[in-house]
Image (cartoon, rainbow, N blue to C red; front, side, top):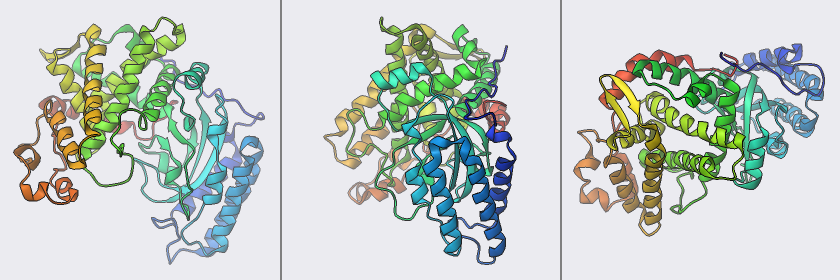
Length: 458
């Protein structure tokens, strides 16, 4: 039976904020105000400023009315009202919500089921690229076993897993994160203190896509994998475990000086390896938790399920999601599939996908070892030599595009010039989809498209 999540939230009072009239008014005001905003959040020159002022007043009133439901966010909600007033008084230019962003500190109160009202001018990754107003009601997903793991083995004080209660248009998309760096500010705060990931959206789209992919490929799923696909709350907890370890890994390990998280232009396959490294580290740690004698039964179960989540999301959803323009997550999924196939752990025979399940953990950890080895060696290499070594690691498993300049060998004038020349020489689709994925994509495309805006209640 499908144990789809129902709303069982912890509330300060008896009111469900997502069902309140004040929330409806707030959403309506945000929706109308967004239509008056340019990409940077300022009003269009021809926008009706009197109408905008009325809408800001409605937002202010709605936030004030809803604030008693969120006493833990009182400072933040007061700052939101002040920032709204300042934006209006300043003539509706580029909004500056630094004050309210600094006041919003969800990482200080990670309590399972605790709710937040979030209102910012912001863009939504994999959603809207405009810094216009968005409003979202969320609740924290913080099961006891995750709290214990974070406190004992996987410290990650910035990590805030959440689920949707309701949202405005920018989140009716593929966006599954709420990050402070997306908010419109004046001077950038000296440090960001939190990052939130929608575990319910991750789990829901995983369940829908993997279920259909398994049907298409006639993959016989293990009992635990079936249990994961059949239970939304179980899948959410599993994704929280995965994300907890993935997120902290970006700054841990034998990293090159730049662990690929600083904004700069470089060949996209480097981002592929970094994201894959973090996922495979999560997989490795899940294997360790399962094998450790002192792991409690609940954590061992979620760690076992996390291996299926990482494997199936990477093999089925990642390669076929998004465009083929520098799709670094897609490339990471392709690499994992080919690695397992070439080591005879994964088989595509007689139009059926089969997996030698006992061999999977060690084979996946071996790919993790290969990437870790690349990083360790790269500490002693110049940047461009590291790029070349990373390319060799990928093309050792995946076939480059026949027209690839990198595969043929870059000329000396490019190699001796600035790094930009090497980046420019990378094709948008440097490692095209295999015939397997081309065929799977034709059958899975509608399902992938259907997950836009999905939540745990869908």
